[in-house]
Amino acid sequence: MSKLWGGRFTKETDHLVEQFTASISFDQKLALEDIEGSLAHVQMLGECQIIKPEEAELIKKGLQSIKTKIEEGEIEYLVEHEDIHMNIEKMLIDEIGPVGGKLHTGRSRNDQVATDMHLYVRRKTKEMIKLIQNAQKALLKQAKDNMEAIMPGYTHLQRAQPIRFSHHILAYFWMLERDRQRFEDSLKRTNWLPLGAGALAGTTFNIKRERTAELLGFDQVYPNSLDAVSDRDFMVEFLANAALLITHISRLSEELIIWSSQEFQFIELDDAFCTGSSIMPQKKNPDVPELLRGKTGRVYGNLVSLLTVLKGLPLAYNKDMQEDKEGVFDTVDTLEGSLMLLAPMIETMGINKDKMFASVSQDYSNATDIADYLVTKGLPFREAHEIIGKIVLYAIQKNQFLLELSISEFKSFSTLFEEDIYTVLDPKNVVEARNSTGGTSLYQVYHQVGLAEAILEKEPVKS
Image (tube, rainbow, N blue to C red):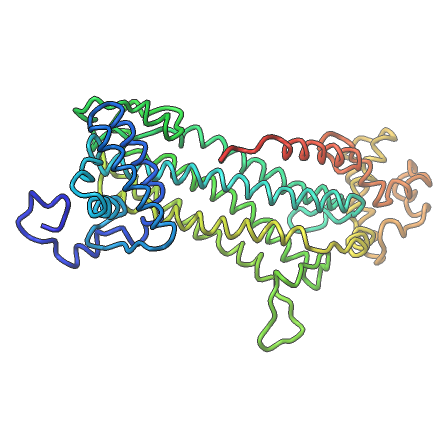
């Protein structure tokens, strides 16, 4: 039999079954993780004298040789060996002889694949954190470079109140900060080692799982062997974190698309992140943020797919779990590509401060401040609100903005109005008046910047 597990069988695997059940086409991404786990496992086997020390050394040398060949692109993976684990084990036996078969002592493919995925998700989580921080740095730079820029703030995509552009863009910094924290926190649960759990019930060999965990940098071993081989929570958590992250990227992308339109003209994206039209030569299309927005669906889909795979599985390992990897790999590729484009696109975009300010100077977004003004004069807010509603309607009917109304017109609605109402209505003063914690005044935004800088100066997660 050509299979390493073929002793029980009297017939070769059907070719279509072989093609259908093989995972080597995608799990070859785990080659280096598989070797990393195997090196720690064989080190432990040698230290525990489960295999001879010289056999452990020979196996380690063989694995290192295969690792070098993988890194240099000299390896051909074969479908008949099903998955990355059996491919590498077959390569090892071919490399050093029958002693290579001792590598699998005290473990199963079930705990082996779980270990590989823990190693992979741990590595990619740390890389994701660094990429998020790069995007945060770009957002922070734009905020610091444009502290004086004032733009309309929106609710329901209708102009609501004037705010600083820096205040708006920093909102995404804090969204990404929560994303970063979620990924960082998930490392605590990813950093559990399943290796040594065997197929489902442990092993008869006197192995030291804690030693393997130490060699691989894991915080602890799974206390329950059934849980160890069947747990995919850490992968679901990674995908859930990714879904929230891509949600925030998509929301920012939507704003960039809107702001760069001819109707808004608040920003201009660098030409390097846009494309043209095959028929309309005047077009400059925001393709990158559109694709960032569009890729959200596939990341959501990968999360739902894995949840669906797991929802009906009895303990312990089931072949269904082979379907757990491709969605994770796809999400990693999607997010890495998205974040690597997001940071430079944000950093290089131009800000049209004049256009932004012109927008807040020609609308009714300062209306709330008139209500606040009347409240400070002793009028209950609800009465003030009704008066301002009437003033706005009056101004709209006259085709004027609030700053264009005369003092006599203001007084016709309330005798509490004085000349200082025009100072109150100035967009710069409207923004500066929001000096409560987390507000859009210059002082508060500078405070935000300080908090953001302190976060980015913290020691990054170690690789």
